Image 1: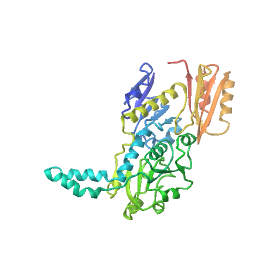
Image 2 (image 1 turned 135 degrees about the vertical axis):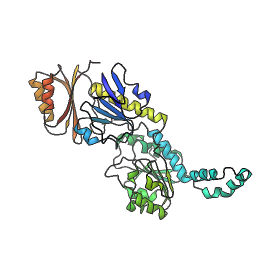
Image 3 (image 1 turned 180 degrees about the horizontal axis):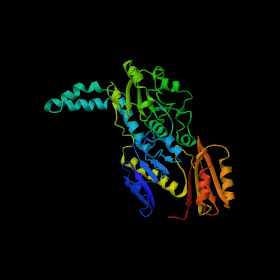
Length: 392
């Protein structure tokens, strides 16, 4: 029986993907085969040698020690796109909040509670303090045109906005989904200089940290409104504060507030609600559960952040799943060991991603423990599984 450890609350619909007669699921469990989580911080957590996979019910994996997992041959899965619609809707809400001072108006209304018959006149007298602008006809610049960026861009077009997109690494899949009416910008600075609204949609990395800094703010229109539903660190706080002071930024909406942000004027701080819908939590749980189960039972990898996507159609009852460093002559050494053990290779797939690779091999007969140990002793091999595809 396989063991699954869940470090956060995972939607019941997702957990139901693990048959009770084959899987044991618990918060506290020894030697788990897989770990499921949402926002639990794993960096200080000991990873048992039994762990084959870590499944994050969400897109971001900053809370997972990726390199540590890679070195142990642990495949880390995420769920790109599962919460895309939820984030898209919140981005649109954030854009409308930035355009019209709805939040300020709501807060004002609370201050006149109990004024009785004076309330209508006080509202009429003060409503001009919360006037805004319409988004129709304004220009939105979308930085990062992945699943969420595409949905935001297309929805903004439907709202009557002019939309530009910038993404030097746009995927073919994203390009197919993007409306032809979205103008593709070759340079980020050009997009910044033409945008009335800017929406950020990229992962946090060394390249994107502090992407919006003093230099980038200097290219923007005065009165620009910025939505950051990606990661807080993509925007430099100190430079943002100066841009607000200089009236470059009219409003900054973020789903990742910190204490510094909460003390700034013209900021709408949302407490990380991007994926906080019943539908998104269910979609993420279903996707990650299917991916983890598929990997445990067949070795298939889909939506991993540290190992390549791999899928090998079954051609035998026995399969070796080998996680290794991406170095030369790995397949040759494995093939030699199997040949010396009188084991034929029926079908094989070898794929790499960065510094690591995965090799799936369907073989004629079940390898012995000694054969598996010989493969594991190859320099650069980090994990070997000897899988009987008929076993339950």
